Amino acid sequence: RVDPKDAGSLRVQFNALDLALYRRARSLARTPETVRWVRRFSRPGEQGLLWYGLGAAGALVDSERRGHWVKATAVVGGSYLISTSIKMAIGRKRPVVEDLPHLMATPTGLSFPSSHSTSSFAAARAYTGLLPTGPLYCGATAMALSRLYLGVHYPSDVAAGVGLGTLLGSVGR
Image 1: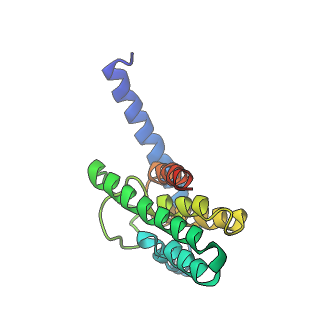
Image 2: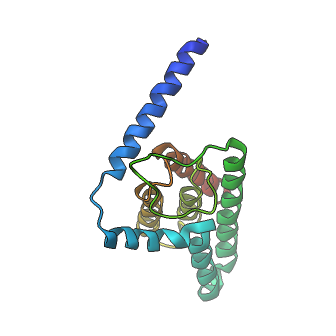
């Protein structure tokens, strides 16, 4: 059994670590050009749009495996809906660190889990076998890390999204 006061202490320690990792990631070298590029890269990840487009293109050009593409794309859509539902239920606010403002606007002020990370890792898992695995996971990882770079998620939000997306993508396969 965990003593409630120990649980509170663990929570404080976890939050301090999360914030320290957030600050560390946000301290990476930035130029206006890099920020602009990362924003452009991250924007199509909203609501999983990049991954839906990939699935739709696959279904159009790969008629032999069209059913697999459609199912995998539905998995991505379902993962986004589940992630958003969890986000609304938990209600964790996005990071607000005075000296580290967000570098991109977001549709909501909610943070946990990262839906970009969830849909990206669900897509990487669901599209495995339809596309080469390496590029899928590189794209998913870059999408997830872009959210931390832009300051709109804590590391734990991204990690939770990676885990949830991997799980949902695996179940959907």
